[in-house]
Image 1 (spheres, rainbow over the protein chains, first blue to last red):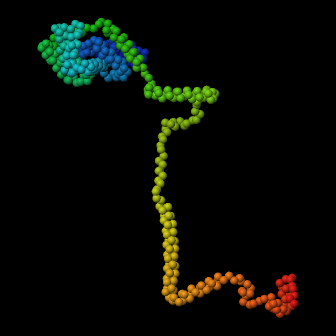
Image 2: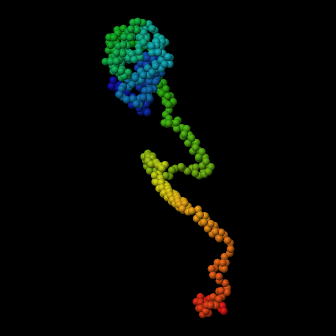
Length: 184
Length: 233
């Protein structure tokens, strides 16, 4: 963990040097792109949309890295940007398509149906359908914990929420998913 | 600490069903995506940076005024070229020097000039005018009183004397006045004979002179220095 942290510090320092700016940034993107992408993709579902959000996230990182303070981990910082950008994107979509909060889950469900290998009988897709029924925050917490296997401490830094609240959110999310799986 | 086992056991404690669900990723993605993403991202960033090339602060707001200044300057130069071409090449440098930090430390503190108060009524003037008016008033009053007094006195004298005089005496007085008037009105010429109380003619004068002794006359002539001498005899 400490080794990774110092590696990130070196990359950030390299980014601040004009000569090594692009190479350092490429290294940062390569290091974290997959994890960031899947976090976004699970929230946004559609690849094109997820790709747009990915680009926005890293453009923001490019613009903000000069002012990045090593108080938090680089990964945590990038994750926070990714979560915020994803939620902003979903809000914009809702506004553009005139979707109410209640219908937001249905909209994401439709997106899942349009996925290439979608099969509602398969457990993996059923789980995805169940996740889309959750409120935004519980969905994020569940994804980070269940798929990313992220610790509550780190999660609390990203979402700026207490560990206790996150545990409660995860608990509620699991219960709701169970209920969905059992009833569908 | 946050290993798969820990999370699995945590999820299992909440829901056995969910814990047993597969954690595999159902979404598909091209294999090259992550390979090319950094390159495409850098291109996008470069494009966006080209779009947002930095420009000096207040560039657009100050642009029109700067352009106008330049146009005016060109007009001035053209005019100068026609009038005095030798002056065009000269540098427009200010030969005057200002003390260091004059402008930064310059504070335009307006003088607290006391406003000139123009009084509508000046007491000094009023006092002068009042004094003059009082003096004039006193003079007028004195004059009028004196005039009234003399007039009244004359009137009282006239009335008192008129009341005391009898009608006969008044008539007599008026007749006298008329007679004097009549006497004055005679236009008889005043001659020596009319005017002199003593009737002196040539013969009388000759007689008087003959009676004066010759020596007295000579003495008189010597005293007065008169050369003209005629013997009366």
